[in-house]
Length: 82
Image (tube, rainbow, N blue to C red; front, side, top):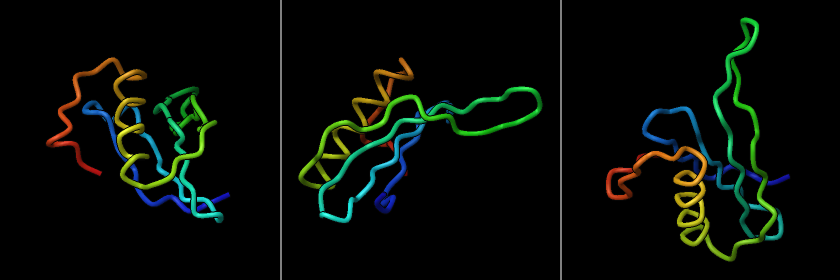
């Protein structure tokens, strides 16, 4: 497992993507959805990164695309906050 270097959230805060730096220096991403079930609230993994990414900037671009795809929300990348 690596270290989470950045988290990006959808506008509704129902989805997030973690950008993870692996020990070998490469990056991967993991997508989560906010869940509420039987009184519990938690982030549930819905998509683990199966690709290795060469840079944090490239990982950020992929993370934004994953947020758009999963959340189906309009995401303004100029105001996207960590």
